Length: 115
Length: 111
Image 1 (cartoon, rainbow over the protein chains, first blue to last red):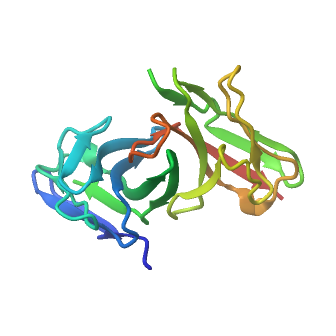
Image 2 (spheres, one colour; image 1 turned 180 degrees about the horizontal axis):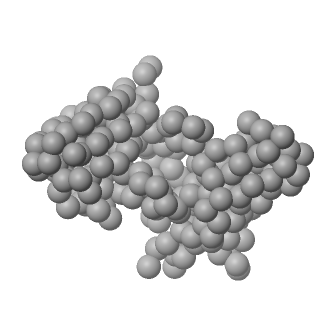
Image 3 (cartoon, rainbow over the protein chains, first blue to last red; image 1 turned 135 degrees about the vertical axis):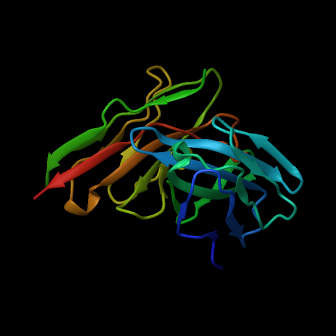
């Protein structure tokens, strides 16, 4: 049971390049989400998914796309990288039981630098 | 608007001193509230959630609906408590993959 796995751990991109951050979970959680962490800003929700085939925007979705074709995977795509997207990205998964949140688990993060 | 406020960016205490990390929230319904901890360059870990009323690593937090607060407390700080602490709110009474985080408080415990 690996929990939430993010790849890569580190990435440097040039402005305008595209890439996909991978996130996989093996806990059969319905919910998955992507956050970015910036100094002094805390964590801000980018996109989230409540199940396979269902995604929605969070607080800061611009410049990012997601899809959820399987329960396990929730990749985050940067369409055309900008320096403002330099950040640490965390993927998380969770499930709901009896109306209460359970098992909210974070990945180890991807540190992205856009030059 | 749903919001979580952590008024202190940095809190510095000496080992053995009491610690209180403040968290206030703005939400019209019945929120679920959490504290997460992030040790240096590690992933976020759940420290506490108000529905379980647990005490983890000596930390406790009580939800005060009248003051809309969920302050994190520990009577005697340890050096290993030095970390970033985030207060978070789940606005729908369930996870839904949608936590709202405060900006975090960096706790520094000096020897």
